[in-house]
Length: 150
Image (tube, rainbow, N blue to C red; front, side, top):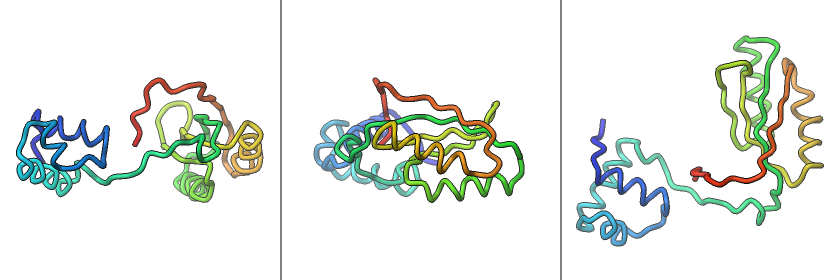
């Protein structure tokens, strides 16, 4: 397990803000030499603390104007029911996140669509047709004042 000291935490904060920052700029921001900074970043990668880098996309530029979180309850609490549900969601491009959770429902989904009409189609023709689904509760995102997903 890697030691997450103040410098490593600072490196992680800076990389979270800008994963394309040059090593030289990163080293300057965290107060290290370029070689020491590169060693720390490589160590964080090897240890699995940094698992990858990705592009942050602009949903409206992609035609996505509707985002909702969906609570889904299943009527059957078997491994087969859960695996079937999860397999079906792998084929649904509207579902960008799927979390198996505890509580009164089994799943929390993040769904992104072009608009309300396309969400209704997804709700009716995808979620509404899956076996074992007994409840669907939609929470429409009206704004995201803080969103740290990369």
